[in-house]
Length: 113
Image (cartoon, rainbow, N blue to C red; front, top):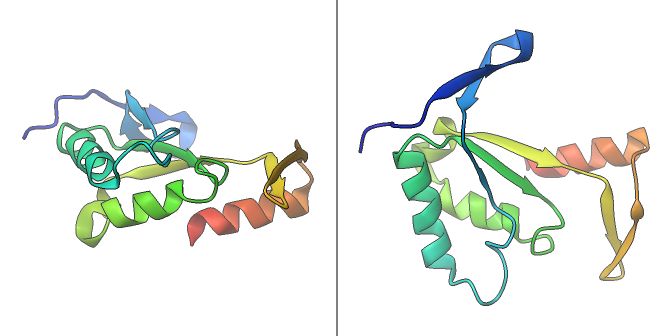
């Protein structure tokens, strides 16, 4: 399928992404069958949506695993992943919003795994 989604450059670094992104929140909940969500991600990439948005609290902690399964092989090289940070879970409970540099680093490193 041909890429039909417009691309744009982000800021001055020249990173180019699809003008439309795919927010992955809600893809990692028990009522959403994983194969269907993987197919949705594949379809988005096939039509040119290469800007995917996730965070560790989606699921919680399972959304990035879903993306890992969906983006095996050469698929990962086709997309740009956006990740967020700030909400922390402790003892399976949502904790306060965190923005201190040490937490930002840990969150970003977790996204890169």
